[in-house]
Length: 146
Image 1 (cartoon, one colour):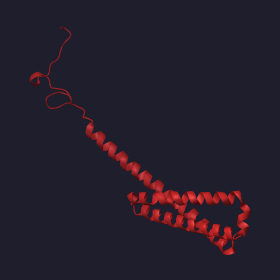
Image 2: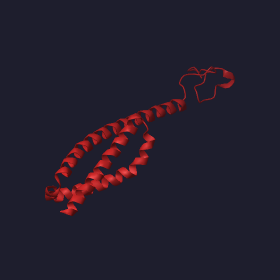
Image 3: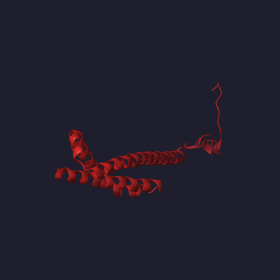
Image 4: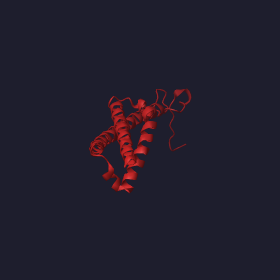
């Protein structure tokens, strides 16, 4: 019984920290401080792994829920809602940041391509861009008799 109380206290602690981390990440995404996200990734991965491991233990042993204190059950239920809400917001903001980054990258590609493609048409000397003009800049034509 005592071990399960500690287990649920640990699960609550990990859940609270994970929810707080998601809120922090959501704030950074909202402020478009995407480069600051890398600082959170290691802790997010670590907490996510611990959370998944603890949740798997609960799924494998559903009878453990009955050993939790009433206040622990209430807190875990609240945290489950908070986690779901923060995770949904996080996913939406990450997707938006990814799409924005993709649009910026496409604009950069288009600008580079435009700068590297020669213009079409003829130059003042009568040549096409990227070719040398005819001798003395004189145009020449051939008729069928030659």
